[in-house]
Length: 317
Image (cartoon, rainbow, N blue to C red; front, top):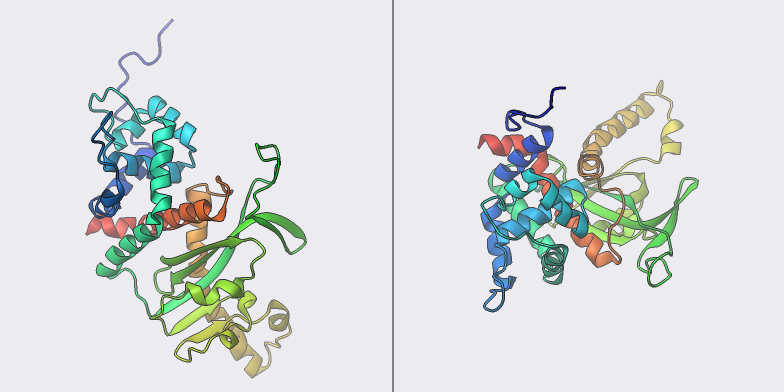
């Protein structure tokens, strides 16, 4: 009987996961992100020397891309040679980061609010390359489910999450509010709230201040009345019920319908980042307790989402 695998060259197959990691290795601004973290990273003057910042940052990003918890990431480093290669751990190192090391690095990023700063660094680079314009924004929000089980040490659900009703279905979790560039669809602002917070509450905080036009769906009706800034023009969608009543044989109603179609084409840009983090990165449920930790993860995901959306353009420059 022939033994399979003997003499098989595993380096000949370029898997989709390897292609993905190779692309992200090229487009992530590693040097600038490392410089951002370096002032807060322990020097390791006593005990075992700490792992390089680059290694820990690469591991942290792999957690986001592949939806891995701290223990799962530790096991993956042992099981998957490609992960060790990406993190620079295949050069004869005698030890690998354990789950506690991975957790401490994540806590360091959370404590110093570095996720927001990383998003700012990424967007600064994209703006320098002409990929991020700031004349218009689109705002929207999406629900992120949280575990509703009480089978934990406290015997309660996460007190910072909340339930809300959308349509005829109830959800428990948080809400991710984002502001994106109306031209490119790249995310410039991320806010996390409990699920029951209305979209209008966070609307103005999603603006960066330099836009002249803002687009939003029908859930933001009346948002212009909550602002004293007359320099921003809000383009809010007509309510679905009102739009269904339009008579397309009437000239004026036909014009209104065409305007709504144009606005919908611009608003569609805000759905792309949601698709990337939920479908490409597999983020559909919160992993941690509390809004702060989960908002930090969401901000990191959207920063990586921006790079993924323009990866082909960045690889050519």
